[in-house]
Length: 188
Image 1: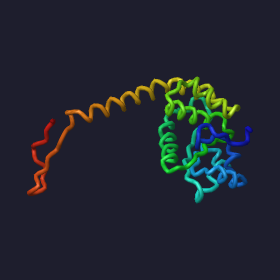
Image 2 (image 1 turned 90 degrees about the horizontal axis):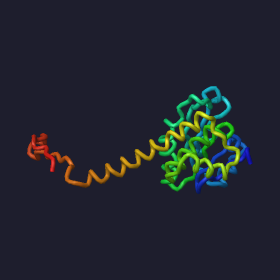
Image 3 (image 1 turned 90 degrees about the vertical axis):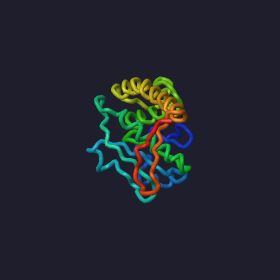
Image 4 (image 1 turned 60 degrees about the vertical axis):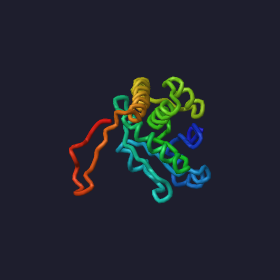
């Protein structure tokens, strides 16, 4: 199983580079994969690379598997890529070299945010589907620290939408005669 990809949630697969090699093209197509997140270190670029750029949409991230690497900075980019895949009815594979640390960390971060889970609960959930995951200690600590960050952002998103529907919207009026902005900007 370690060399194969596993479906973590419907349409989101996690696995090693071996699952995205040229010999696995039929398997990727059989699972209806449309998008691939390829995570590698820059020194791995010679052997971990997009093999089917004409067939799948790729997001390639250069991330070292070291505890000092700031991996949570990539979670929003991965989230947006996965969500855009879902928006077009696709399925996505997230892989690193082994599908154990970097790729697992980003999938756990996605699961945390999507379902409002703690690191521990998201880790257990993902590990039940891909038993060999093992984010390095620094990545695990960052995911623990990420929980209050994404929860605060979600609270702000909710607050922002309630304030923009009220009477605090700023309106700008334009003079239609000469298409110049009038000084009558006002708050209503």
